[in-house]
Image (tube, rainbow, N blue to C red; front, side, top):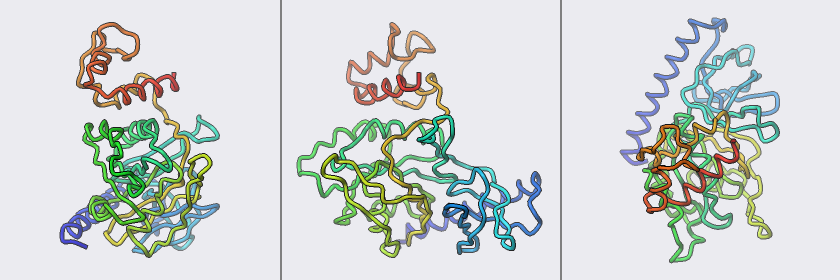
Length: 319
């Protein structure tokens, strides 16, 4: 670990301890948690159990409703049960795939949401990135776009599809779990932080974690050659600590990502490049109104057409 990585790790460890102390103090003032309750963080949730990190080791406990990976909790070491979920600093959510009226919390209290994508095998899905960016913007965490499998790219591979995200100031890391290219930079960016790896099935989230820290030995799989869709390898979320001090939550791959509790008028707020333009109407939806500065900017090439088309697709799905 480099000197800079050690410095970052100490910074984020101190930050996490401060947050946990404040959350614990807040909890004592408002809850009926037992006096023997101890603070910890949820590292894994299974059928009828959860693992709570406390004192550097996981303790298996009985969960409570509404629990999510990354939650700070108060739990009873004697009774081996979680008694309270402490206030969340950040919350990344989606709709439940089986019932869009139910919120599915992907991860809580993370610093960075790492969107893992590939340009081929499986191909890039900008629409999925756009939906993730809305959910991340609402969550309070920072986004990072990690492009895996660059070893499959030809020398003249077109990276233009990533340009709109670079222009937004989103950090983009190009890497390969297979060859190790770019992993040093990815490790440095994540050092000492609490992160969640998300993305389409088959993009190689578990392979990246194995490459970043070989002691993890997570199960991996390949992409179907018939339909270029990934196979679900990770079946449940779990938090792992890497050698650079990062805590990373690995999540199952997805094929669809529904936005939770986002009304149509809110959507344009999360396309931040639109905010630089003043339209003729303060409540302009950037679809049919006259004097729409956003549509003019798209036609002039000042706003990426791909992003605007992505906005329209998301808007039409939520109306």
